[in-house]
Image (cartoon, rainbow, N blue to C red; front, side):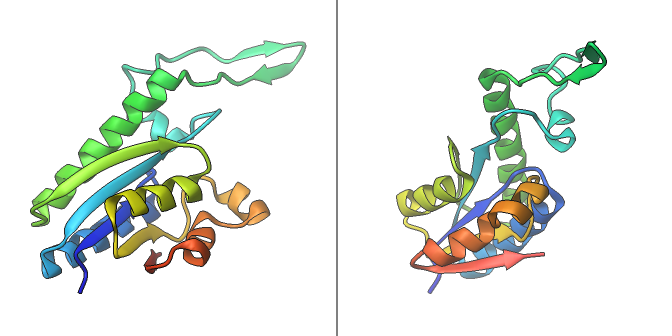
Length: 160
């Protein structure tokens, strides 16, 4: 019996599909749903930058000796974006009929953040997208979903 589901969200289309699937499973089993996000370090992908025009003011491109300079996103802005992303995901889950939705975010290695959150939530099932916003890094270092599947003691559903 599935009683608690953790779904990982990062603003990608695969995560949106995972959220919809997790919400449907939670609704059908009357299970609790824990929505989790891992803060992205460094440069913010365009998909998440669009979520927060207020927290991240537009900065003009800059170049030094012909080389362009990308801006690091302040942690406060990342936290604000995480909270908005989680709030939106929780709203979608509730609208899909899930009765009990909680949210959390963490910082660090995404696979480890997801695993720790699943343990804290006592999740029976982790639902996550097959690809997130870090596709290139995943190809080089191994995907987050693969790491979670290998290390989680419960069931993992990977959604495309």
